[in-house]
Image (cartoon, rainbow, N blue to C red; front, top):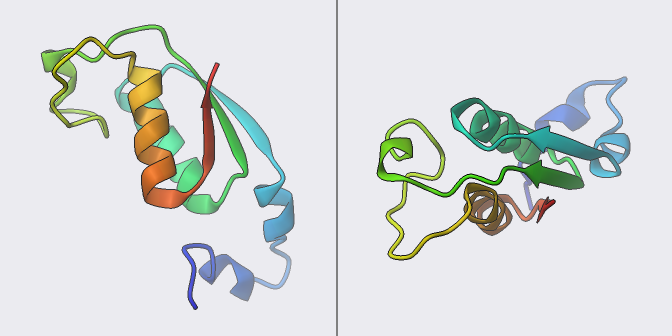
Amino acid sequence: MATATDRQGRIAWWNQDVIRGAHIAVMGAGALGNEVIKNLALQGVGRISIFDFDQVEESNLSRTLVSVRVTHPVLRRDLVMHLIHERSGSGAEAA
């Protein structure tokens, strides 16, 4: 069965095990942080720690991965962590 990281395996020098074993911290889950987190998850990074203490607000929705409506206050990092885990299986964690 094909995975999201199969393409990297075609590169002779690529070592997906190193990527899978990596632990990367991302400071901020706003517009730029969302893209960074998404790309790290799609590359197959094993653990991503997300540091962001802002709540999701209506003004965030048009420019971020977190473009879902929430009915109660929620931290951006928690929502991004949930969405990344749900979509890629990556080990994102709130920090």
